Length: 125
Image 1 (cartoon, rainbow, N blue to C red):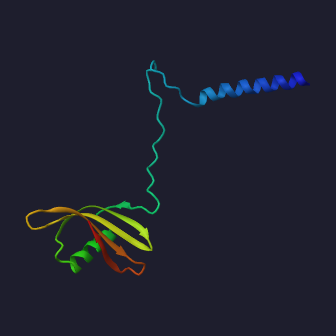
Image 2: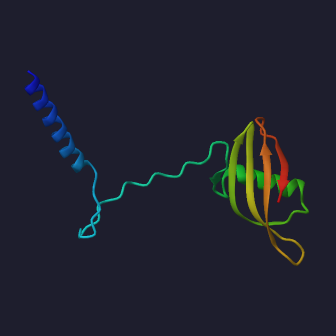
Image 3: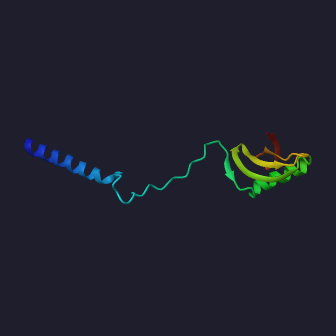
């Protein structure tokens, strides 16, 4: 009985090792073809961080209209990129080309939209 058990244990180990060798591709410089790489997974956004959105997203468009209506001194020529952050509402961050007299500059403008849809200008860098 003890010999049978040892035989089955040895056979199982050998079979397992043989199967494990076939599970993982091995790189060899002598191979003429490269084994396929695994499908890349998208990089997850950080929880609580900003998620990129299109500059023509309705939230970005409404934030831009809010800024132009309430702060006409800020002459926004172009929105280069935008992102949103979910908080108790939404933060909309826009990287904008601002037309300053004689020197256009890139600024980061942030608008907060509360849960009732009200907008508030919260920052410029």
